[in-house]
Amino acid sequence: MRVVFLRSLLVVQVLMLAVLFLFGSFVSLYEVPVQLNFGLFSYTGIGLEVHHYISIFTLIFGAIAIAFGLKTKNTLVSKLSAAGLVLLVSAFASGVAFVFLQENKLYTIAMSAFFISALITYMSAVFLVKK
Image: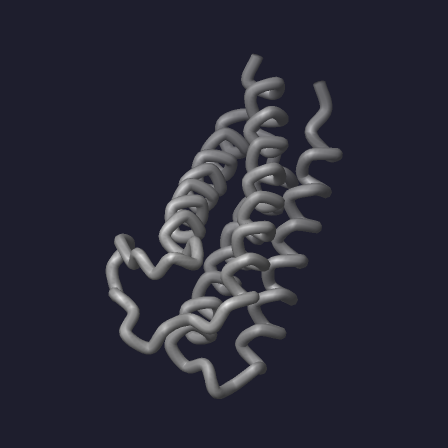
C-alpha cells in the first residue's frame, strides 16, 4: 500500500511540475511589473500568484515524497526525491532572482536547467518505484 501511494505521489508531483511549467511559461510571456508585492499575494494580473501557490504545493509534495521514500526503505527513491527537491528549490531561487533582477537573462537559463533536471529526476523516481 505504501509503495502504491509513493508511486501515485510521484506521479502527482510530475503532473504538478507540468502545470507549473505551463504557468511559468505564461508568466514569462509578459513583463513582470516593477511594483511587485513581495508576499504570496502578488496580484499582478499575469498569473504569478497561481504560480506561487503551485510552487508551494510542489515543494510540500516533494518533502512528502522524501518522507515516504524513507518510510518504504527505498533509498534510491528517497535520494532521488531529495535531489529533485534541491533542484526545485534552486529553480525557484533562480526564478525569484529572475523576477526581481530582470536585467540578467542568465537567471532564466538557470531556472529552466534546474527545472528540467528536477523533472527528469522525478520521472526517473516514478519509473524506479516497483509495485
